[in-house]
Amino acid sequence: MNNICIGAHPFAKEFMRELSKIEDVRIKSYLRLVDALDAEIRDALDIVVQRAKDNHDAKLLMTIPGISYYSALLIASEIGEIDRFNDSSSLVAYAGLFSPFDLFVRREDVPWSNNKAG
Image (tube, rainbow, N blue to C red):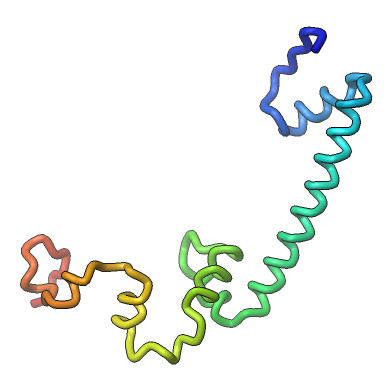
């Protein structure tokens, strides 16, 4: 469109600022749409953050490095009631964090294990 070149990444603030200077009704319409979607995303994020702060299990999960609001709620909803698991091994098996092979082999019997005890 008229060989317009903006030297910034799309949707970066500088790009959006330069784009808004272009007098084209289509661009103005798209920019209003982007603004509306940004507002929806902010509202949804606010809800996720509040729900994570109100959820005891999610708060515990967020103490793990790399686990934030969304991930904590996702993990908590996947696990459900923690009391339904007999022990931590049951939870690990449910989550698929190790193979069925690991269920039958003691850690100290595996030569490639990082287990120092034994």
